[in-house]
Length: 172
Image 1 (cartoon, rainbow, N blue to C red):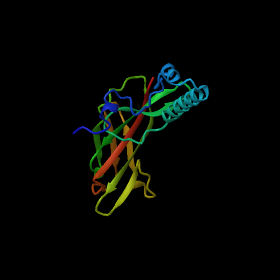
Image 2 (image 1 turned 45 degrees about the vertical axis):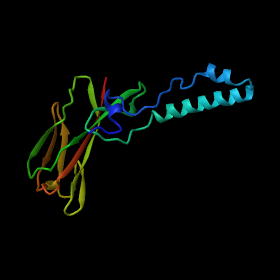
Image 3 (image 1 turned 120 degrees about the vertical axis):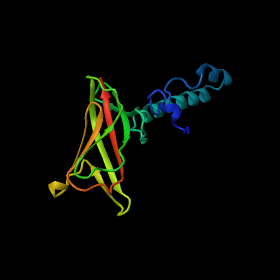
Image 4 (image 1 turned 135 degrees about the horizontal axis):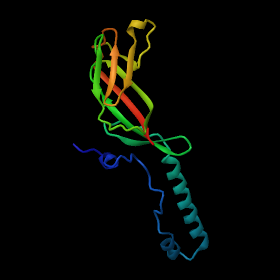
């Protein structure tokens, strides 16, 4: 089923506001001979463009299972950061679980963030991933390799049936 964001993610661009001319200023000028009104309209256009430029630098609050540009930039080179949500299901019990991420990584890719959360819906308890427990045997390791998100537990965690991992990375 299509949702309201499908068009934005079709080409991985995320949610961005156009910063090019939205109005034809020559047409606006031809509508009025009043120079003050024309100046107000020009200033309004300039302000709208500044708002669009600032808005496009935001971090999108959208988490989907598709790769898209999330609005973050990395370093002074304005390298775009991509985000992808991985739905991992239940945490494993004292073992390792591998979940394919389906990202075609190349040598020029670098991760900027790897994080997640697991929820126990029965006891209404959540834990961050990776998880550092005061008891080291309850730690949860989280990492990503070329093909998979890898989650390793040393204790019983299968009651955490809803697990999400977020991958953020750059392509240089």
